[in-house]
Length: 546
Image (cartoon, rainbow, N blue to C red; front, side, top):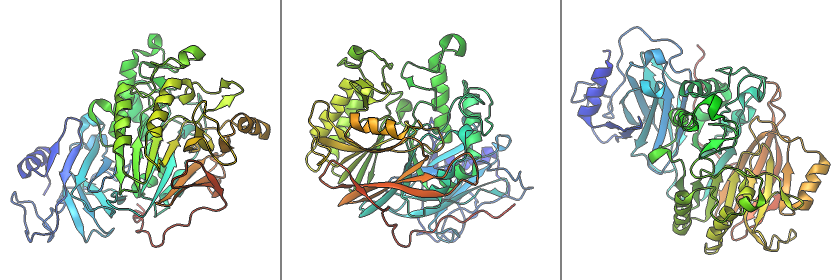
């Protein structure tokens, strides 16, 4: 039979299987196959596992029902966010989802009807709970007789001996092809992809890249503009495939709203010609929540912690919109003790996360570089932590207060370049030969496509002379970082792609690797990438050709 939207909502309410929150997220309780019920109490047909089966007897809907694919994110040990989008003209169609332990869906663990939200750009986002830890699941959606591609996700462990994360940032559609996403998608051994922001860029055609046409073709300002920009990005097959195969853990940086944004404005925003900043900020952040598989915090908060089985506490920050004061080039202002980068509320939250952390490693996922970057006595980039001296000192105080082994690894995006650096405290002697004086380590991931600084060998050498804690830097190549984590050590492997200006330049290569031993706060170069684990769970099968 064909289920109407009204009937769908009635069933959801009657069965108590899902509740719609004010954010539009559907919270669904996964059911287990411990029942022999053959039909639902409301007449819905069920399989032998006691879960409902998809029912539809009308004409099939459009083939491009699920143009923007599927996605998952923010995995916990017992739950994960699932996402899809139906065609806006099909938003009233009943949407069915199912989750299974196998890609053939013979071992289903959850299934139900949900609703796309017209006021959330026809997206569907649900929090599936009752899952098993450290388990790979497969999922799909159906609507109007059409099926989405099969997605694959993985829950976080309660105990872990080894973890693998891909780390990326800065994907500018207009500047080239997303080859790095393609390679991440093909890695069956990833626990998650950590995206550190600049998932989209706000500029119009030709303003910052011109290789691929944007939609809309002008700089985005309104909610509809931002939605259309996300839609264009998600039509990219490499990005769609990365989302299909792996859960993403995402934070925004500036370009999800406007370049060099802060809490009260942005360098690339003019209230007189582009309207009030709060309106633009609200539009950008709302589209971010609609289109990405993130568990939504109160009042638009994105800083959050995700535990990974006692091995890793993953702490994701917002250095952009939560509390940042405006950037300045004035040294006396940069050193103002009241100056904020995180904001008081987020600082207090971060302090509590550090104090409560019992994991072997603390991974700090955030947007802008923490380690000093000096050009002589002057700072090079006032948008990073260098421009917020007191805020960085307070961060260092938190790390200093941790018991040994501290094992703090900072993961950073934003710079469109690759960095492996120790993190010395201001005013503390640092020895580049031994690493003594370093408080933590930092890895800056290269951009997916956004242009690098094209640093000459002479410039790179100057950077290292003025900043001896910088162990390696590449200003030009695009790619991602692969983290391999055990209790004994963490290894960061930088993978670069041939280029981004042609579909033919899609090969990747190992560029450099660096290890951090547990109990040490400095990095050591390694000559080869960490070996992949044997027999990872199979990738989700490719959809059949249309």
